Length: 232
Figure 1 (cartoon, rainbow, N blue to C red):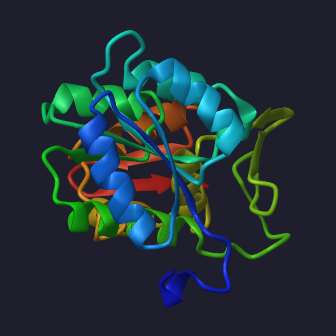
Figure 2: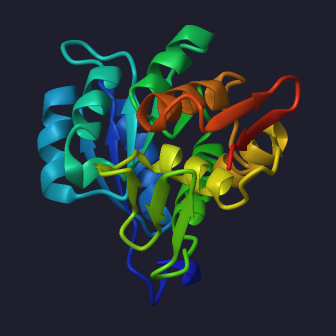
C-alpha cells in the first residue's frame, strides 16, 4: 500500500460496467494504489453491492443493458445513505445531452472512454481528495431565509428540511458563504469541481437549475456573461 494511504481509512470504490475487461483493468490499477474495489457487471447488482459495500465513490458506465447508469444513479440518489456519495459516469458517449442526463440524475463528474488507467486513477484521486476537505464543524450559514448546517450537511428553507446531493450542497455553501458576491464561472468550476477534473460546459447550469428548483428561483441570481451570486 502506498504511503499516502497508510494511517488513513482506505477509500472504497465501486466500479460498474458491463465489460469485464474494463472492470478488471480499472480494478487492478486502483488496487495498486491501495483502494478497496468492488465491481458489478449490471445496474441491479450495482444497487445491491452499493448497499453492502458502502463505497466512497461509484463509477458508473452510462450505457448498460437492462438498467442503465442514469437509472442506477437516480435510484441511488433517492436513498438517504447515498445522497452524499460521489458518483461519476464512465462512458464512450461524449455528446452533450448524455452529460446533461448524467448531471440531471445527480452525478458529480463525467469521464469519457477510452481512458488511460493512469489518467483514470488521477481523476479518482482528485475526486476523493476534494471530497475529504474538512468543513468547520458546527458551522452554520444563514441568509435570505436559508440555513445551512455544515456539520450535519443539512439545508433548511423556512420550515422545510432538504438533504441535497453533494455537488448541489457544495455549490450552495460556496454561494451563501458570501452573499452578494458574484462568483465567476471559472471560479465555481475551480472551487466545486477542481482544475484537475474535466466537466462539460453545461455542468454549472444544470446544478444551478436543480438548486433553484429546491430553494426557490429568487435566491440565486444570474449575472449574464459572468456567473452567479446568492441574493442576500
